[in-house]
Length: 260
Image 1 (cartoon, one colour):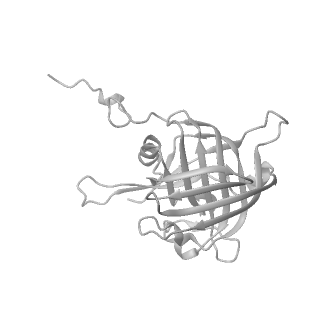
Image 2: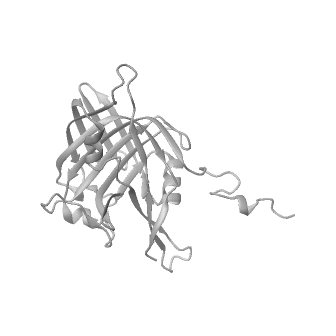
Image 3: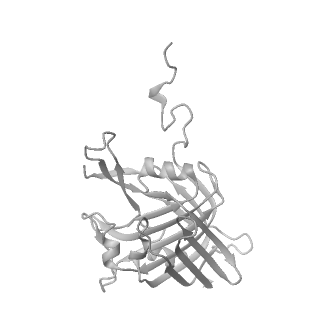
């Protein structure tokens, strides 16, 4: 008796019951804490392919985005948390965000992110919450080893132009997609993938203003880790910080460069 699986209609594994479906993925009412920081050039540059240039403000300290989110709803993956460290880079003289590290707590989001786009996602413990008069965030991997601790104090509402001028929400995202060869000896497939994530602050129903705020943000790389060397991005210097509620769309990506 022959198998019944129609290979021409397969998108992801397992073929008859895939863990995730085709993008785009739609996100609603996301709580997002983010900041642009100056960081350590040695630690940041070791995560960046040699055909990309790091963006600085003229002092040889590269800029990077710290991004921590709670997604209460996504159309393809359900609810989950996420943490991202993404240096600002130039590719063909155009600004992009390159994702060096990304962590989630949802298996479908992790697997789809790695297999479709090449997001280097790892599973971790994280939390984003409002406590007292501040926004608090942590990242642990494994549980009990605190990699990141962040605190923001909101000072005022922010304008969309402020967010966009910092490169957040206006710069395309780049991923280094690495697919090992099954024989474990041949070279892997390595591609540079570009994805244009759409992110827009929500509008308050009370006064029609954007649910976007700015203030001071403390970011600490608490413990060193051999498996997750985020601490090498520090010490850091804050440039700008934002917290808000957003809607997002994660569309399909595009291979823009083949290394191997």
